[in-house]
Image (cartoon, rainbow, N blue to C red; front, side, top):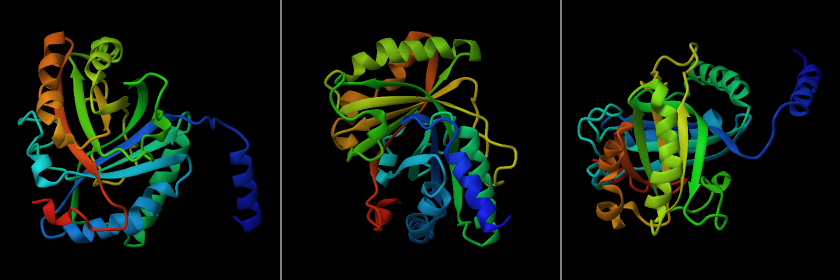
Length: 279
């Protein structure tokens, strides 16, 4: 394809299709660098992959990296987690927003670019994907109503902490009931006076069949919900009174169970801060 033809195709693509500003979809990926490779992994992700493997792609309009130092890893529960084995696995987390209605377009590009990166030896091998899934946005619940940042700002606003919660419904048919309870009852009550300004709720989607082989399909595509709690304070400051019992209230609802609760803090882009605190 010649340069003029490529330019014409780009112009045509930009002129059609959805382009509303809202996180219709998300990529949430939690990775464990292999012991002894923590610094090399962080530099590869900071200096190359965050941009070439994510932010440079069409329709991915926001991103942020998070880290769980060892003390944060030890706060995770339940100990027998269906998401991470052991529950402490996965010290780095990346979150990305994708324009609503552009999931298929983005996926075609991301599969192609990652195959190219692999051919060009720009894929870091000494890591394990613990939890990597694309998601569809289901709801956002705000603590302060119309005041404060919206979910479109969540990955750019300087939040000082994040809590990832994975909840599983008893069956695919009850996930809608679980979502409604979380959105309309549980989260509005829990957010009152909370250090969390908002919670976004996502539903995992199947990964493409032609994905890279080191990325595994997560379980629970039809039954799970992934919640991201965006905090205005360090998660350690209120862990005991705000986040240590999320599993009990979900279980008491009779609609499902908590499979994973994990706190993170933001990385400092371009630095190796916190790398020495992972083990």
